[in-house]
Image 1: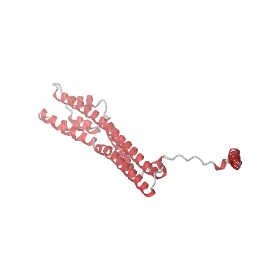
Image 2: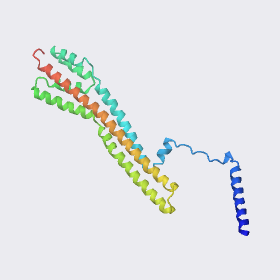
Image 3: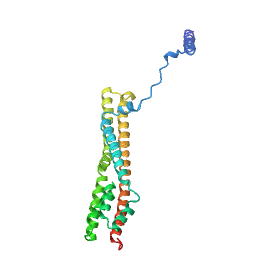
Image 4: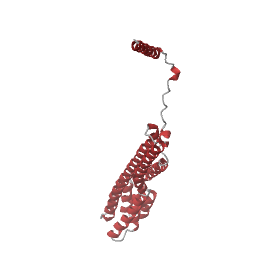
Length: 241
């Protein structure tokens, strides 16, 4: 009989607690606010100290890309009437006007042809060699600092990999200190690991893309210089010049 009474009492108490929990109004003010989204700067800052050299490499890649883009774009602009005017001057024997035209035309091809004009009267092989050497020098000037973009494209992913290793070390170090595995303990290391990897790869891909764009422009300019060089050689070897 006593057991039955105790069982009824416990059941009634449980029902009372359940009803109290269900019927208790939820206070809106006690709801935790949603976390604010991270800004891009805050997200990058969580990558740790390794993000500083990665950021410096990104600024360098951007600077050299813009600088080379301006230089190569200016060098690629050559007047359409340059070769016809040059042909008229050379055919008429007006070498001073031909030299003045080359000096007033700011392009690698005009400098190369100016070198050839200075060698007129000498064997054609010597003229070709002089123009070829001048052309190589002009192309070297266009490709200046281009190797820096290639170096950045290789170094940046390596720095990201170093940041990944540092992040993993940080995770295990904090686990050892806390003697427990919780998301709060490993979150900082995970941020550093993933952000540095993504940052390094992004900068590396950007640098390689910039290197490819500038190199393609230089290659096109080299082909144009070769074509203008052949036209000049045809002019000086034509019977009616």
